[in-house]
Image 1 (tube, rainbow, N blue to C red):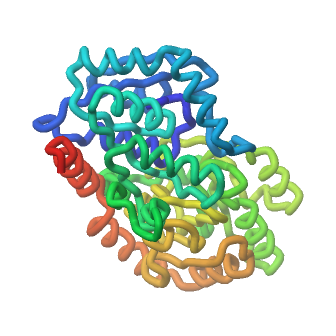
Image 2 (cartoon, rainbow, N blue to C red):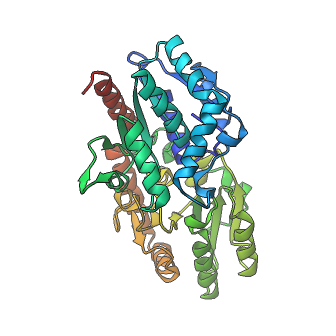
Length: 385
């Protein structure tokens, strides 16, 4: 894995997958380019980890920041991999460690691992955590996924449908939903002592926005809704914003301009999300165009917190409208206001949705089920099935 990318849902999922693999069946060896937070956490489990130097240009590639998508981009990355000697170093490492299967955790790893697999005869499996658009980038990424990977584990049916070729779903693509640890995200095991840290008043209705701060996450629409509700006289709403990102300065400016600085608290990156979720009444996800299978929604549901989410990407596959939360059109401030007011006025509904959300996670979205399904796919690929 790369390791330099800011940790998001996909990176935390990779951490859970590696930590929960059956050691009776698998002996994981981590190959990484940069020792970030996720790599350090994996190392704590005494998993063998080997650094493969790639250089700053390669490890700092971030797809969402690239302005021009064309075949030249992939060719440039490929040339840099060859020039750095990374492909040859990885091929040698695979042989020395007697590796039988390559699992690629991020897009750079898929390119590097895919080429190494194709040139050594090793099978390559990878998750696709991205909800690609049908644009030039999407088409390029689909092409190299299909060319280099033996199995593509898509985190939702929405993502799986992206791998449709000539009207038929590619058999390489298999949906394995993300999973959370219901013991870690368990409201009965988490105290809410962070409540006092934020100065939350008794009776405050606490919203939560958890995730990277970027345009497509649509947090500005949430802040517009809060300003509108405040103008309507609903003054007891507080929003905790967890995360950082390229839109942070702009979003803080919107909050100041709308005079809701007392209602919106920017907490930055947090590593105590279960505690944050424990004090929330609702989690709000305002994604505009892409969302594969959001870990935030699953974590909230596991903590019995209802979710207001947009009808985007894989969100409707996770959040059941009217049962575990409410689904709204993206960018619709009025619909968001109505949903928030609905849950403010009906605490019994919130409790019912919270309970249903945890039951849904336990039935379909646990890390245990996810890892066992992934292990079965690993074994089938090794058997040549």
